[in-house]
Each structure stands twice: as C-alpha cells, then as structure tokens.
Length: 287
Length: 274
Image 1 (cartoon, chains in turn orange, purple):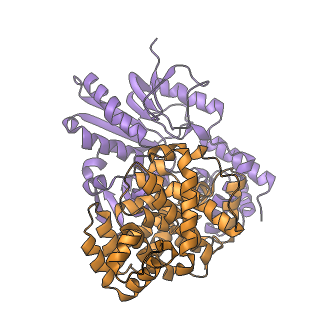
Image 2 (tube, rainbow over the protein chains, first blue to last red):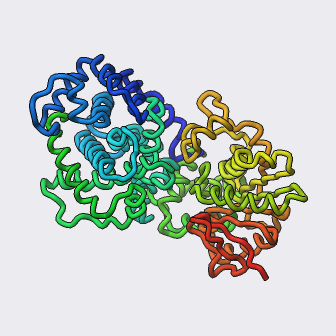
C-alpha cells in the first residue's frame, strides 16, 4: 500500500460523487451502440426541458454554423451531430461539480473547462479525419479525459505537490509519469473510476484512463483522447496568448498515435485549427 | 525540510545492500516522498529522525520497512500486452508440443509484486489452453517483500487495479465481485504459488524453468548485479526455455549467452545454441 496516498480514500471519493442524471446516462448508453436509434436520442433529450433549451441555444450559436433558426431537438441533432450533443449534455451535468479552482492542480475552473472543450473539439475533428471509426463518443471522451483531476487534486497537499514538481524536473518525466511514480496512480485512472461510478460505457472509461498512455489501453479511443489532449494544450495556449502558435510543435512523439488513427502528420494542423475555431464559436454559449 | 546528504547516503547504501536497487542523488525527491509518510506513520516528524532511529538500533523491522517503501511495486494485469501475446501465440504452443510426453510445465515469475503478472499467465493458460487442464503446471511467483506477497496470496484487487489492462470479459470470467474488490477465482489462484526470494541471494531455490518472467527489475540494479542475476537465470532456465525481460531492458553487453527473439515488443529471449 502506498503511504504517500491512500488509494482507498481516493476510490471512496470518486464513488462518492453524485450520480449522473438519468438523461445523461441513458444518452451515453444509447450512443455507445454503433447503430444508435436517432428517435430514442431525441426522446431522451426532450424529456429534460432545461437541457433542450441549452442545446437549442448552442445549435443556434456561431458554433452551429449559422443557417436558419431551429426550434426542436431533432434539428439540433442534425446540425450538431449526436456525439457532440451527448458531450454537451454531459458537460452541463459535470460543470456543477467543479469549484472555482481545481484544488491540488491550481487550475482555474475556466482554464480547466477551456482545455476540456478544446480536447472535445479536437477529438471530434480527429474522428472526422481518421480512417478508423471510434464510436459516437469521441467528443465526450475528449471532454472528460481530465475529469480525474477533480478528485485527485483534493488529495494533493503541499508536500505531494512539491514532490510531483521535482519528479518532473529532476526525474525528467511528464506530469502523468510523475504522478505514477509518486502517487502510484495518475489522474487518468481516477477519471476512469469516476466514469465507472457514473456507469459510462467502457469505451469512455478506457479513453479517459489511458489518455496519456494509449498503447496500454488496447483501444483506438485511447489514441483519440491522447492526441486530442496534446492538441488541446496547444489550442488553450493560443487562446491564452490570443494568437496562433507560429511554429506548431513537432509530432514525432505522436507517430504511433497518428498511425493507429489512420492520420498523417499533415492532418494535425487542420485538426488544431478546427478545434480552435469551434472553441471560439462556442465559448460564449458555454461560459 | 529536505533530506541531508549523509541521510540520503545512509538510506541509499542500505537499499543497495538489501535489495540491489540503485538510488541516484537526483532521486532524492523519491526517497522523501516514500519515507516522510513512513516516518510519520512511525510517529516521527522527519526522515532525519527516522535515520537516527535506524542508526541507533541494529537491523530491525524498521530497516526492512524502509527497503520495502523504496521498492517500486508497479505492476498490472497484461502489462505491455506484447509478452502475453507472444506467450499465447508462440511460446506456449511450442512448449506444449515439446513437453507433450512429460505433460509438465514450470513457470517462474520473479519480482512478482502483488501478483498481477503470475495471475495473468495463469489466466492465459486457462483461457487459451484448456487441453492443458490436466497437466502438471506450476507457476512459482517470488518477491522480496512480505507485505506484497501477502497481498498477492490474498488475490483481492481494487477496481483501480483491475482497470489497469484487464479486459472486461476476462474480469467477469475469472474474478468474483466481493464488496468493492475483485477476487480471483480458485481455478486461477490454485495455479500460482507465492514464495519469498531475494534476487541478491547467493542461491535461488527455483526448479528448472520452462519460462521465466523477470520484467522491469534489472533496470533498478547496477551492472554487476544485472550480470550476476543473468548468470543465475542461465542456470535456472531450461535449454529450450523462454525468458522475458521488460521493454526497456536487455541482456546486450551484460551476458551474450542470450539472444533476443523478434516477437513484437515482447522482450523475449532464449539461450543461444552452443
């Protein structure tokens, strides 16, 4: 057992989160099925009036791509796509759990959410260009990939934060490996526990757990969340700087992921641009 | 308060002597992260106090706790996939053919930590080689730490642990859900025997093995210890046996009796034919 972090306490905290509303659970279960029944999806959303209003607002925003005003969920689903709609439904539920700042990680709520949304849009753009089909839930997987930070952050005291920082600097390793070394668990794994507590489909659980180590996940969705996370970091950095990155980062360390997804290195820049455009278009509606 | 040089040297010497694990000075943060919680657990306020207590007494349980706290027990079911694919598609089919007359297989899993690796091997055998059900198959799993051996024998795993690489169909087939834990079913559990063994010991009480797993262990040792361990592996591995190392490990420049078998990224080796 790790004395640095009580894993049982972390698991109890993940399982202590309020359950997802029935509509969100039903929707993700429906969409996990490749041949999701469109009419069923419409029914689930229409059952929740506040959700319906929110989605109509998003569909009629710049993100929806303009066009005539729409007034029902059927049209919203056609305009936004079922996967994106499911993501927004989940996001509406999850946002109530986030405080002003993610404790332990020191991330302001707005930054956390901007990164999550950027990853969701990147995941959707990846799915659109990938030669492989990763299900209807790429957007939601991108959106929730860092959800574990909400719980793990509660357990990171000043000592733990200092060790994690030094594990990155002195140990020359990325933050998730540092978590693994110091805490014997990482935020992806905690996110997986939350997704299981919420009874989300297996593909979402995997996409969240393995977003930093997709080879361990043995499922294409893990590569989607991995690449989406990398791209989202760049997009969020651009947003903060209010200007595009001049020289996109090398994709060398993403070679395996790019190959598994059936993409080429040339696809990365358009995906990044698309994620950035979508983020800007929807920002005012979701913030 | 940070860890002083002399305390770090004392701890790193103890850990090296007892377990062979090399702690470089840049790993000071790791020593602090593992030993400050241990010191507090022992009612002490700092690692400095922990070291004073250790220096005052001759070898006692505290020294062992420190060594165990510094041992990395990272493991998971089906860790890295490739070795178990190699086991399923090449290694076991070949060995089963070769041992058809004696109907006996002996597998040794060294530094087996909390048991996920030997149980994975047992699951592969049960799942893919039902014809071997009446063979005499023994999987011996060893580790230095009494605590992790106790956990391995209990065969109880948290949701977090089964999430690390265990495919859902195998989880429901070979585990039962008890409270918040998953317990390995007897049909798998009885295939594995756990024993305490320090890889630094002069002699290993291990029967000649058809397959040896010693993955992600050598990386923690210095060159002399790596060579000594590989020398002993040679004595335990049967001439037509198979030997698995971790993905970042190699026998190259350490022991030329082994040759790598190109099976994806399985880290699989065999003894060179003389």
